[in-house]
Image (cartoon, rainbow, N blue to C red; front, side, top):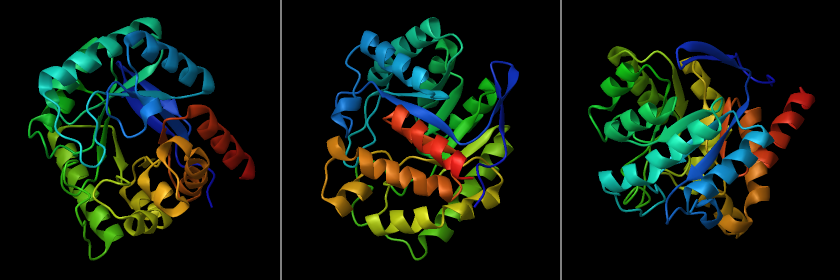
Length: 280
C-alpha cells in the first residue's frame, strides 16, 4: 500500500501550486434540497462561517454547488443556479483570498461566471456530456477540471442501473472523457468514479474495492463517499448519522489509492488522512 500518490501540481490563478495527497475538499451546498440537510448553507454568511471552519480544519479546496444532484433531483434553472452560487463564490474569494474554490456545475455559463468571481477549479458531474460547450469553456478559462462518471442524469440515475463490468466500464468512460478534455486543451484533470451516481450499492463497493485500477489513467483520483446511500443501506442509517460509516469508507478509499476526498465533514476526514499517513 502506497502512502499517498504523486504530488498534484496544478496551475491555479496563473501559478503552479503543489499539493501532497491525500487532500480534502469541503462541500458547500447552497441548495435547499441537498440529500444531507446539515450541509445546506442558507445564506452567504452561513457559507462563510462553514468555509472558515473547513479551512481551519485543513481543507485544500472548497466545492460550491448550487444544484442538488441527489437521486431524483430535478434540474435547476440556469438563473437560479447562478443566483445561488456566484454571490457565495465572490464572498469566499474576498474573505479567504488564499483559498482554492471549486465550482460544482455541469453548465459552462456557471463555470465561467464562477471563475470570474474567484473560483479556480471546475467540478463537473457530467464530464462535459450535459453541456457540449463545457470542455471548450474550461480550456479557455485555463483552470483544472474534475470530471466524473455518471450513468444517466440525477433525476433518473438510480432507476435500475446496470453494468456488465462496472469497474471496466467506468475506466473506459473516464479514459474517453480524459481524451476529450485533453483534445479540447484542458491541461490539469482529476477523475471521479461517481459513487452513487447511477450505481447500486453493490456497484459502489466493487468500485471502491478496485479503485486503484483508475490510477492507470495517471491522474489524481477523487472519491466522494460522504454520507451516501451505500453507507446507509448497509448500516441502516440515514445521512444525518452516517459520519462513522463515512470515515470508514474514506479510509478504505485512501488505502485503495484515492488522492482527494470530497466530504461534508472536513475535520474527521483530515484525521483519517493523518492516521493513514502515519500508518505508512
